[in-house]
Picture 1 (cartoon, helix red, strand yellow):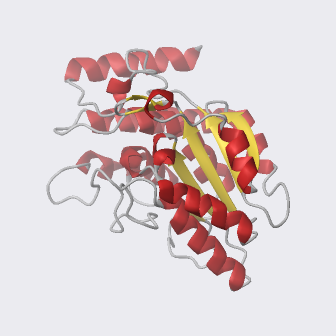
Picture 2 (spheres, rainbow, N blue to C red; picture 1 turned 90 degrees about the vertical axis):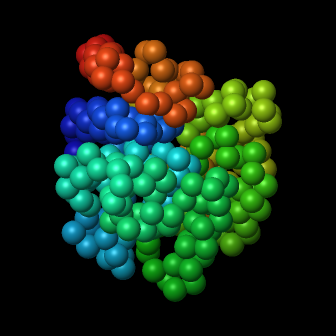
Length: 274
């Protein structure tokens, strides 16, 4: 169990790692990794029952990064949590390495290869239903991007989870309101998002996805009701922590030059002091 200050420092290190990976030869999906950093920190350092030295422990909680393009953020989190050495992050997107841009099963702690958007929640429903039928206590957490909610398969899974009474399933939406082509609301209107999920039978909590104390309090409430799944609607900022990338669609995929890497780190640390 980690205190608030420790979790905030962990989230800062995860963002530092993401920026370092983006400074590699091919860049990285930065914006969505930075927006999810606080959520990933709270999950892996407070909520999830996992054993980094035994990734396939049969009593673990499952985590699925449905927004697989944020693989850099997940790798940074898994490394900080001890699933593999932090030094390996330097091999991100390098020939011969296992840290590909999107998560793969070669990486300890990754449950499913993801990247084709809109499939993570269906996988989560399958896992949660299986553990329910087997009377096991494993919980399943799925982190989705808001842009992928435009995929029809998400809503098929959203209908199925309440039907099967999956209170062992938690979906989290990283609601940064940006996708690679612009504002989500301009591409396909999602609001009123909370009400839409509630109409399918989900319990919905809305939280500031960068307020670690608020995230801790929200996860403490889960499950809200027996036999009902939970959706955590986390309002975030794409590129959070770096002013020249924050809330800008160009942060979706970035290759940082040495100068931009230094500038990004400087802004990240200045923001952390406020």
